[in-house]
Length: 359
Length: 244
Image 1 (tube, one colour):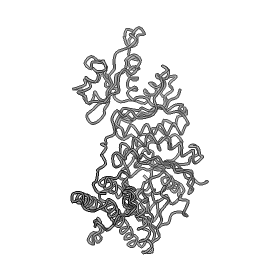
Image 2 (tube, helix red, strand yellow):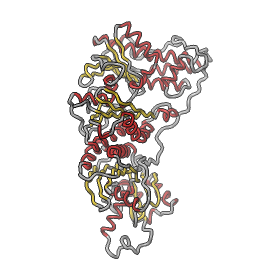
Image 3 (tube, rainbow over the protein chains, first blue to last red):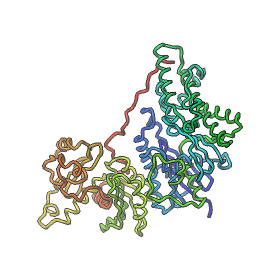
Image 4 (cartoon, one colour):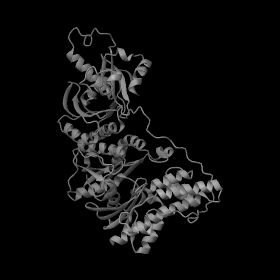
């Protein structure tokens, strides 16, 4: 059989993504985002995202087919994110995927969103496939996870995750505190670089000493906490510092707070990722999720990976953020390995565990 | 015309109907109010396995609880794309009105006002109420003769239904035909249902209602949910920080 033509649908958060791959060749990656609709709420509102998905899903499928120059009837299999993610948002994608599968009479693969983030390198054009074993750091508005990947289909282990906010969420909330708009990550980065106050002078990352959550010695000794994250203390610290400075009229810049906050988030992400690499003896790290767009994270991670003798892979940003191509890539891999599809009665599972690559 | 109809506004239902003959080629129903996404795959696969292929997809656009409602609409949009056929929307309660008018016609004796061609141009009001969750109902008024929409759809607490109807020229206490799950949930306030067997929209009647609209020269709507409620979210003003 020639390489399978697989259409993948992603709708777990605020991006409606449809990707089409042929085996390990990416044909198209169409993404429609409702990000602009969430700005006035300061974060992703599940119902707003779900409403946008149901409007976007038809046009997204149509434009993906057009861009890939394929007909839906040519598709060999459908893949869709079954979880984890926002329940109502997932259900739009799963509903559409089931409609396609039933109407075309093609197999449907309900796949894991986190595994798909890792699988995306199977179709990335700037790299020759997926490097395994690897440690994966997935960071976005909804996720902050460290995974050990022996094999993207049948050997994925969750090493650690956030116990409260996702890193991107912490950025959003602190951005708001500083009077910056959603999405918080990019705006905090700009503020940290002094690009928002007209000075062009970067903030002082050491002006305020921000805490590193779950990174004390006793935390790192505790296997339950060693790879886990917590950003709530950091958020509270930012609130305390900002209100204190506002009350006292202290000579503290938004740029300083932004820079210190960003550095605290990045430091703990990088430290724990490299701990995981060292502990598992795996000398490869792959980054995924929307926060991969943060240049300070990429710089610090690259520098400290290099120091530790660990190779770092950062896929192109359009493949790091949520997208349908990663779902199609994982689907195509499952098809290629001769693994059977999901039963058409599968549910969308908002808390799907990462070792459930296929539902 | 062969219509594939899907409604997931209350329970979930899928049907393939030949609207020229009125024959139901295949239909699948789930009484479950919540497991729409589980239901829709096998149900569509079963109905679409028939030799007859749909020429039009009609989806119930609600009103109904949002999460389940969108499952049927998204699936319908995808089926339309897969088959290269149009996808249209119709208010879900039209299916209940259609089922009522057809069952009334079936039961009618020659003397009946309902089936008589001599009946008034506009028939009696049929009040349809569905579960809107949060202790509210979605409701609308249809005409008993030709199943056309007279008023609605609205969403309100059961105790407020009478005043909403009054604002639209109907009196709750004089409406004899009351259909839908809303009357099973709130009989003390809205009255008992007049036909207990008709509770949720069924896809075969949605298809027939769509055909009736097309025959009457009315256009179907786009497959866009009729929410009647804003998304639950309050815009939070950006905080002003005095820091520079």
